[in-house]
Length: 366
Length: 231
Image (cartoon, rainbow over all chains, first blue to last red; front, side, top):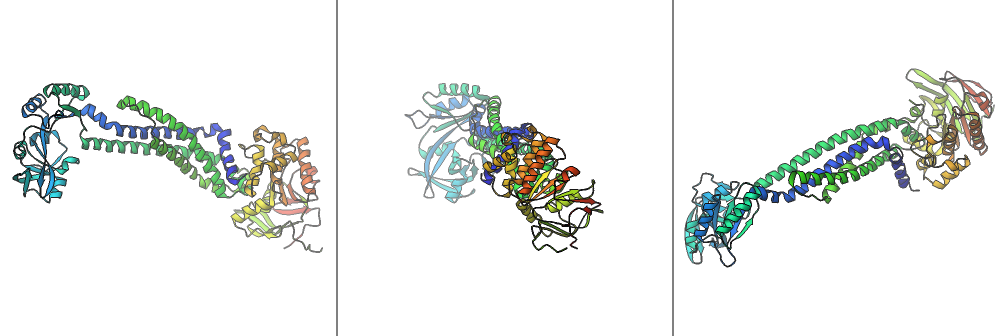
């Protein structure tokens, strides 16, 4: 029998034959693995579903023209915006500026700003009706606030003074924003490419608002859209930090508990360590047996914890977020690795006990 | 008396061992020839176990030299002592000292593992020699005292050591088991092994080829001519 195989046999023996003594460590580790699995699964599940959750709570809605039309007429738009005041109509066209194509958006800028409170308008106190360049567009065009934007659509041109920049963190950063009227005049068009609404009050209010708007905009397509990205990101970040911190606290608590339990076991086994030394065992080999035993303990606890943690995550996901969360592979892998690592680290702490186990003294029963 | 020319199995020269201010052994000289069976006797605290620990490389003397099979072990590092112990010495203890969560077979294999390679068949054969083949898969707690001591003997002999150290091997046994253990020790002696046995029992000591009496860390009495003063 190879030394490794026999070592495994010896390391497994106390777990098979002295289950009650390993129970405290096993329970603590399994509890830790359960909570880590549950938290990691929750995090993964909630992160991927949080956007959906935001939509059901936050209610952002975009109306686009019927397939046969390129815009929603001004009169229809006015009716819809009157019915749902927290909205704005935006006309988009592709314009040329500084030899480049740029998306030009014409809208009621104060309403647009009110609708998107997380966008950063610079300067913050700029006149609400001026021209604002998305930060990426400003960089691409080499323009800054105070300068003049020479812009043209299909032969018609205009020269607008740039009031400031806007940063949304999204595709708006590549666009140029101006008031609806001059943009429509430049493009020789009328109507809006999209109507954007913010309907508060949850999923039911959103559904009601959607129905109301649909009635006012026959044929238009209405789609709930990504909720406030920055807010969502902040919540995700907070969630991640909270779960990470909670997991660390759990692991620390479990680690201390397991370290105490394993140290007690090591102290009880001092005579055995002394005996092994008397039989010719070297300290690293004896320590290896103890660490391997702890690793097996960690594996067993992880198996229990991954199963229990997945069930717990499913229950918590359902109760807290209304989600059916399936076991998450990276979460399970993290729980397995952390549990085994924790068990091994805890088993290394009693090293001085093994080192101090002088065979002569141990065999005398001291 | 002429000095023996071949290296002794065990030779202690002016060996002292102190624990703090307590002198457990004092300038002790002892020579045990290969194949000898030495009985160590003496009252509690006379230094018997200390002497066995020094011979068994479990401890180092405070002064003096210890040679086992011609090798000066008193200058060995802890690691060297461990290796030497695994190679040369087999231990039998009064308290058996079996690992409680390992079976009889695994306890024997443990000694093989620390010596070289664990061999299940060899270990089973060793248990058969001590008439415990049918108890191989039993845990120590499922064995009687006599059976545990026989497992201990199988473990002590499995690596074919030249020296057997037995610290009151029959101290916890009834008469029937005592006889069986002594029979096994006798067989080990007949196969050429050197045995150093601590005992309080004069009847048991009579089975040895030589007896020495320790008192206050010194050899008080010896009934054999091979006890030499090497200092």
